[in-house]
Amino acid sequence: MTTLIWYGDEAVSHWAADDRGIAYGDGLFETLRVEAGRGVLLAGHLQRLQQGCLQLGIPFLASWPQRIADALASGKTGILRVQVTRGRGARGYQSPSVITPGFALSWHERPQYPAQYTQWGIRVADAPFALASQPALAGIKHSNRLEQVLLRDALATQPQCQELVVCNQAGEVVEGVISNLFMIRAGVLLTPPVTQCGVAGVLREALLADAPLPVEVATLTPSDLLAADEVFFANSVMGIWPVATYRERAWPVGEYTRQCQAHIAPWFAPE
Amino acid sequence: MTTLIWYGDEAVSHWAADDRGIAYGDGLFETLRVEAGRGVLLAGHLQRLQQGCLQLGIPFLASWPQRIADALASGKTGILRVQVTRGRGARGYQSPSVITPGFALSWHERPQYPAQYTQWGIRVADAPFALASQPALAGIKHSNRLEQVLLRDALATQPQCQELVVCNQAGEVVEGVISNLFMIRAGVLLTPPVTQCGVAGVLREALLADAPLPVEVATLTPSDLLAADEVFFANSVMGIWPVATYRERAWPVGEYTRQCQAHIAPWFAPE
Image (cartoon, rainbow over all chains, first blue to last red; front, top):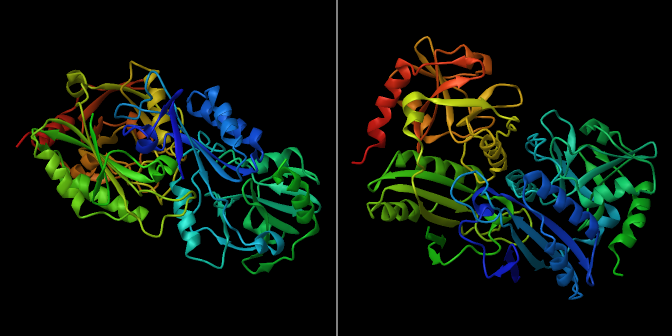
């Protein structure tokens, strides 16, 4: 798991001790699925990273897309993790007057999810706590992820479940722990807004722009899920996992979910 | 600014590239004012760090208090920053099955705040956004600090102001950007709860346990502040800063604030 790290355009051998990523989680990341050198939904990942930099006031360096392209040119298959930080700083929350951002690339094994998750669906449970609402940070893939760490560890205590239904404090559904949530009602694909909390997943954005059925962003509750024709979780690493059971409800994998899986399959294929 | 870093009890020369502090802000920190080798309110800092570790599921190592004591034995004056992380991990939110926490100590200059802040008070403004409520993370000094980074940078755009009144999304006052908030009403010292958001400051805890006047945790609004007899911000690095102006209201430094300043002065003195 070699990690290549740069500050600005200077390659370095390790993170600086005073990097603000360590101190404050002051950064952003992307997790890119790579198929034989092709980054799945790469443009969407770069766009979200750029948007996150804009929102946090971290410069997005023109050299970064090229560094990612150079890494992809190896032709590898796996996961390329991209980490950005605000770089080094003096003690204290205030951003340095000159920001030289940190940037790192590391290769990881593709997670070996059982094929049945995609084929026959997963079991999901309710998250043990709700996400905090913070419009100033919603949507972007920032590195303040303690909520997700705690939720992921809670999920690990229920080995029969593969995802959690995570709500906001108003009791509305937001997403899963590692993926976005979708449901189908009367032939329409629905997914909750991520303007108060949650991550604007790259596969979510791609489906909002191009799905095989009408798609809408809608406020949804657990009751809506239970009444849905079909429910699935999706992200750009795992693709689409149909929900087989949630609370007292069980679903066979539905026709629209299969259509969505077929629709995104070319996005995940090697060139 | 040398930083000493350990993983478990092994000293290392730098943070590991796969440290979860960088990836997720998965850690905690303490900022200890040191006077000629004496850590101001050291027991309170250690207690909060231990509580934070408990809450996040990071082991609190028995060697850490001794490492801090060793650093203090140098007799220095300044700021000793303590950083804890969950240590190294594979990609993904889930905590490793065996956690070897990261621990770092770094010395920093004492911030050179003008003496007038303590003597005559500061000007404060309203924060541009509200804190998110998250009981699972409230109180502890975790390293997910993007809200504070954005607020501190917003404060820097108003150089005439030294702190911000930061509210929760219900419009109740929580704290400042770098300090806790107190007000005096009818001879009682009041400070907001930090059970939904905010940091349980070490000086705040010390004053709750031992103040020169009756003290209560109370839900407070900006209107309460404007109607208060006296208002001040406090933390264990800067001490107590009276509020001189907030919105249309101005205050002389009040008698109770002076009593509190005198009361805590021995806590900040060298041995």
